[in-house]
Length: 282
Image (cartoon, rainbow, N blue to C red; front, side, top):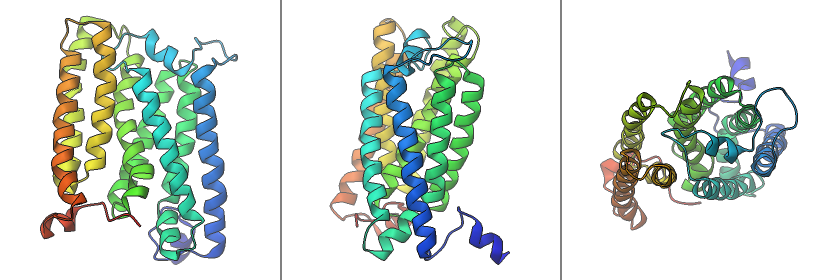
C-alpha cells in the first residue's frame, strides 16, 4: 500500500521529493501549453481533417441555437483570465518557498489531467464529435470535483486558477455541449428543458457559497451565466432563458459579494472560517 501511495499522483502528501517536483514542473508546463495552444488555434481556425462537420470553437457555439448558447466574447475573456491565473499557479512550482511548492504539487496531478481532458474536449468539439466530447467533460468534472473536495484548503490564487475556475466552466459545459449533442436542440421541448436545467447553475453555485463560503465559485458561475444570458437575449428577446440566466447571475453575484466582503476584511466568523476553502493569499 505504501508503494501505491508513493506512485499515486493524486495522493495527499505533506512534502514532495526533488524528482517529483521536477516531474510536476515538466508535465504541468507541457500539458498547460497543449491546452492553451489548441484553444487559441481552434478559436481562429477550423480543423481540416476528418469527415464530420468541422468548425472553429465559437462557430460551433453560434451554429446551434441551444438554450445554453454562450456569448463568445464573455466566455473568451473568462478563459483568457483563467489561463493568465494559471501562469501564476505554475510560478508557484518554481517558488523558493517550500510550502508554496508543496501546495502547487498537491493539486498538480489533477491539473495535469484537467489540461489533457481540455485538449481532448476541444479536439472532439471542433470536429462535431459531441457525444465523445460530453464523455470527456463528465470525466473531467469527476476529476475536478475530486480535486475540490480533497484539496480545497490552499491559497485562493491556486484555488481559483486550478480548482474553482476550471470546475465552474466544466459544470456549465456539460449543459453547453450536451444541448448541442441532443437531436434538434432548437425545438420547443429542448428549450423547455433548458429553462429547467439552467437553474441547476444557481443551486450548484449556492451550494459552494453557503457550505464552503467559496465566493470564487459564485463569481465564476455568475460570469458564465452572464455569457448565456447575453447570447440568449440576442437570439430571442421574447423568451425566458435570458431572463433566468440574468436572474441567476444577479443572485450569485450578490451572494458572492455577501461572502467575499467579510472574508476580505477579515470578519469571517470562526465557524465559517473552519468550513471556508480559501486561505489568505501567500
